[in-house]
Amino acid sequence: MSIENGSSVSEDQARLRYWSIEVFPAGEAVDGHGNEMLADIRRTGVTGVFQVCSSRVYMLEGGLRERDVRGLGGDLLADPVSERWRVFRGLAEREIEGPSVEVHPLPGVMSPVAQSTLSAVRRWLRFRGSPERHIGAVKVARRYRIQGAAGAEELERIAGKVLANVCIEQGYVQGLGRNDSLPTTLPVPPQRPFCVRHVSLSTLDEDGLRRLSREGHLFLSLEEMEAIRNHYRALKRDPTDLELETFAHEYPSSDLTAQAVDRLHVLRERRAEHEFQVAQYYERRKQPASAVLYYQSVVDQYAETSWAPKSAARLAVLEPLAQ
Image (cartoon, rainbow, N blue to C red):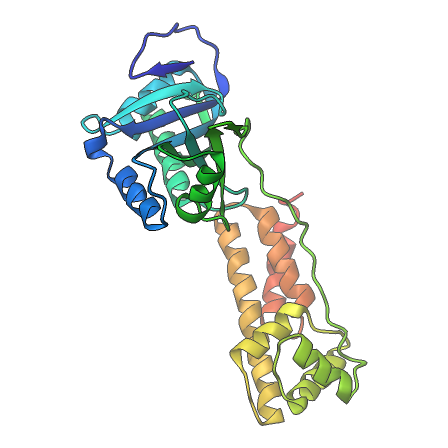
C-alpha cells in the first residue's frame, strides 16, 4: 500500500528499517525522460510501444517513521510544481499500473545521485532536529511503465538495449506474464579480502623472463626484465604484481638497462609516497586503524625508500590507538 502526497498516518507508527519513495512527473507533458526513452525504443525498431512513463525510486535504509519519509518526499526529493510522489513500506512494494521495467544498480556500483541524496537526507534530518532518526544508505532506481509492448520478452529486450546498462545495472520486468521479484534489502557488494600477490621473478631464466613479459602484458625488453629481476634479487624478495604492472605502464620501451633500474627506484619512491599520503589522509580523518594499514604497507613493501622510516615513526604513535 502506498501513502501518496501527504495522506494521514498515525504519529505513533513504529520506525521501520526500509522505505521507498517513488517520484514521478505530474503529467506526460512534463515527462521529458520518459519521452526520450520512447524515442530511443522506437529507434531500435519496436513500433508497438506508444507510451513510456518514467519515475525515480529512492530506497532508504535507516530508522525512519512515515512522517519523516513523507517529509522527505515533499520537502526534498520531489519538485512541488512538476512532480508527485508516494511512499511504500519496504523496498519491494509498488503500485501495479501495467507492464513495467525497474532498473537498479548492481551491488558495489557507486552512484553519485545516491551519494548526494544520502548527504541531503542527513542534512534534512539534522535540520528537523530528529537525532533519534537516522539514515544509513540510499539506493536510487529508475522505473518505466511501458504501454504497447508485445510481451515480456520484448520488455526484456527493451530493458537490455535501451533502459539499462547491463554492465552496471539490472532490469526487473513486471507484467505481461512476468513478475521479477524486486530486492527486499539493499544489495551488499561482495567483500574480497586484501591480498598482496608476489610474482616469482628471482628464479626465472631468459626464456622465463620473456614469457612473463609477454603473458603478463608487460611488453618489456629482456634487458629491462633482467634489470628488474636483479634489482629484486638484491632486495631478497620478489616484486608484487602491481609493482611490475605500474613500471611497465609508466616506463614502456626503455632501451637502457641502467635507466630501467633508476626508473624503478623513482617509481618505488612515488608508490611509497602515495601510500604514505593515503595513510595521512586517514590519520586526519581520525581513522587510526586504516592509517596503520597503509603505514605498515610502506614499511613492508617499500623498506628501502625514504618513506619507510617516516611510516615506522607514525606506526609507533598510532598502533596503540588502533587497538
